[in-house]
Image 1 (cartoon, rainbow, N blue to C red):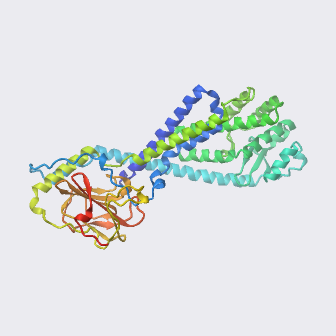
Image 2 (cartoon, helix red, strand yellow):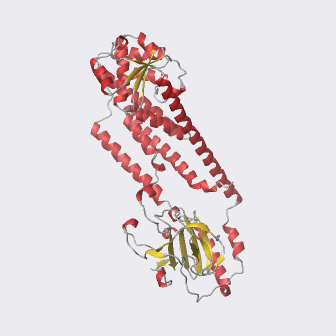
Image 3 (cartoon, rainbow, N blue to C red):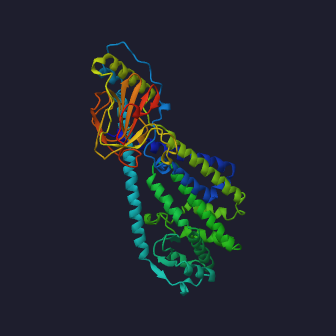
Length: 501
């Protein structure tokens, strides 16, 4: 099986891995300068979102254009004609073929990427299945009446909050810590051990869980857990999740102590009791919402003894985050839109030299006076040469668009040698593309094709079938984008060919 087609996915996974690692290193460096930043959950939330930027299909979101012009400025200048030599094109084409080692490496990279994607899919399915089982188990827990004597420790404000937000209190027989759950219908789950604690500690712990619901922390816990499942191969995502979980808990601790400022010692005792009455082997179905580890609980006990953590001025923090978000978003956009998927310079030069030499050596096979023909006889021009339209950002159109139906035949506009017949050598937005060298420094290009009837190295005659009209690449509908390049300049195809209006 050919796995080379996954090369683009391999590069995207690689970019994501490097990008996320670089972001975490930058954030870690900032934390070394300002250690208290690690307890600021907004920093880790922003970092998680920024890590996902390389996965955003910027070109598809940015433009709905029917095509991008070939980035010929990235290609080498076309060499002058080679007049001498008896070497045939067939042997010359072998010079440009991928070596066996290179091909094997591409296959290995593609197979590895496919394996990573399959594991990610399985982990994502496991995530949703576990979440489904978790929600079913929560539904079986006993629901407690907020007005019952069991919950007599609740304050008037807490009762009002539970009622206004339709939050249910449920009792679990598992040896877990109290936790909040539910994105649509929130619940607070309390283990049986919770009810043997002093009322003051019960009040503080349930205030902590209500704070999670107020702050919508459950959304971030769910998102970070899903990202951890999908991107299991990225250590940066695992680190971000663990740091985010801890910072969320620390901020909730601070919020609770802000409402109960004289109960710091009591709150510390409550956390110790949570550790004492909780099993170290937490039910895996609860991993979505029981995010504190035992080492984190111990750290939190130390944190609440310290003075209020200062992260700097609030408005400065927000401005810094906005600036960083804009910078990294622009960088990600640039990487995704400006990287050109083109053949190597060496490959292009070698291929073009051999094709022009072949044309010169076989002049008798070419009719230099042949009239250029319409590549799609059933078509009509939908966008002319040098047309400036909003769809292309008002940049001049470097070719013409021939509107046709999918499957309509595309023929060679003139005699020449096929030097490109794939979807990888030029920008990916061209889709399936054929480029023909007609000699004398003249090339023609056919983009968005549905299928090929020729391959690289084929000698073609004017009117010979190249393939079928399609809608591949970045196209708003079935059409052929057709260009003619002569001596490194785009020329108007209508000067050589009579098209249908």
